Image (cartoon, rainbow, N blue to C red):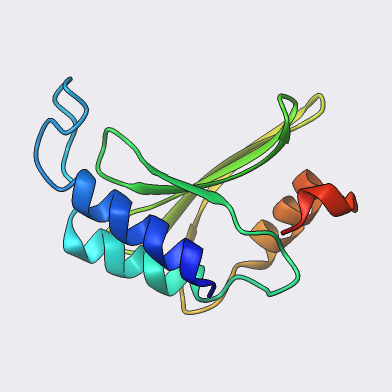
Length: 124
């Protein structure tokens, strides 16, 4: 896992660790959620670009891969290791839930690859 991704997860976990961190009553990001996010991020295949990291009002940590308004994938991680995902791939929309079991689910590898495509500027 690259250092920038580790830093982003830690910053999100710290800055969003108190109730109402967003000014609208958001749930705090719990330490267990940050641990699950770290574990999940550690399974990212090295050939895939790193995502942006953020927090959701429900206290989940979110990873987002973005190429264009119609090419985006968001994966939210909760304290139990559930991975909630939603993707927009042109006119196709897909979503679902996977349980994190120590490896990147194949469905997410496929969706990330489809979102970032083969454009070299989408890879870091």
